[in-house]
Amino acid sequence: MNVLQLMQQQDAMPETYKQLSVEEMEERVARVKQKLGARLFIPGHHYQKDEVIQFADATGDSLQLAQVAAKNKEAEYIVFCGVHFMAETADILTSDEQIVILPDMRAGCSMADMAEIEQVERAWPILQQLFGDTILPLTYVNSTAAIKAFVGLHGGATVTSSNAKKMVAWAFTQKERIFFLPDQHLGRNTAYDLGVPLEQMAVWDPATNTLQYEGDVQQIKVILWKGHCSVHENFTVKHIEHIRKTKPDMKIIVHPECSWEVVQQADDAGSTKYIIETIANSPAGSKWAIGTEMNLVNRIIQQHPDKEIVSLNPYMCPCLTMNRIDLPHLLWALESLLEGKVVNRITVSKDVAEGAMLALERMLARA
Ligand code: 13P
Ligand code: SF4
Image (cartoon, rainbow, N blue to C red; front, side):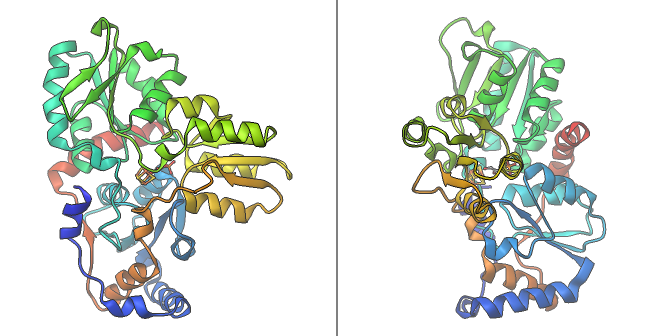
């Protein structure tokens, strides 16, 4: 579901919430949390704003948030502070009785929007014709539930940035080739890390429904969906060159949604959790340039006054959809629950959820 479709499903937040002071909103959120106790669970992704993340019961990267959602059996309401695909995953992994809420339906993910199920269904028979039954589909969790279901029903699995290497290695024990959706960069970076040369990777372009490759197609081992993250594409080789020139003793760490060129020239790459831990474990006085979302970079800077930390892109890169979840929307979603009203519920239909569960379970069993 793209952002436009999500907006059509949106319950409208009363204007009055926008006029409240931060102090009042914080006090009221805390009050609802206290009233609902264990009936309420708030997971928060590392890219969320501080004003929201301060109220999260658990924070994490995509894998950790999927794991905590799968484990939580007691919460009646899961108010997800993250983006749509994360809330869908939580709905799939929790029981039918548990209600998942996304405080603002406009919190989509532009990368997930780059792969629609209809496009995948158009691509698959062409790829089957070219390669026969030699391909295993894998999807980054940053994808719709429908795509996860497609992958699950075709023997594949979901991956996150923290287990992509393990999952791609597993996929190659199942089939000769992989079809990686929807982030070409994570797919390319991971396969390359595992020893697949770039010459054995092709790009599937959903706009033209064609495979972009020059040479003997039978050499192809990895088919990458032509999708990317519009936040991480803002970190470039030029930024790396600038840091190398101006701060030669600074280390560069980036998220693997950055391009292959950027990841190759950085000193290190990994999930949001990996970035947080690497910097936390580095000695006082160490210097870092980070290539990932702005809210997280700012938080890491604040948490480590003993280290010199900058954003790899000096203009900082916010994820605008993550930022849709703000204090007014969180408060509104929570107070609605006290009034017996559920706003912005995320529900994945049973048939889609069953297929998607197969893909998620294959990942969680190996995570
Ligand atoms: P992580 O799983 O590393 O937190 O990444 C999620 C995401 O959307 C990054 O853009
Ligand atoms: Fe999607 Fe990129 Fe935002 Fe992550 S940072 S949620 S991949 S748009």
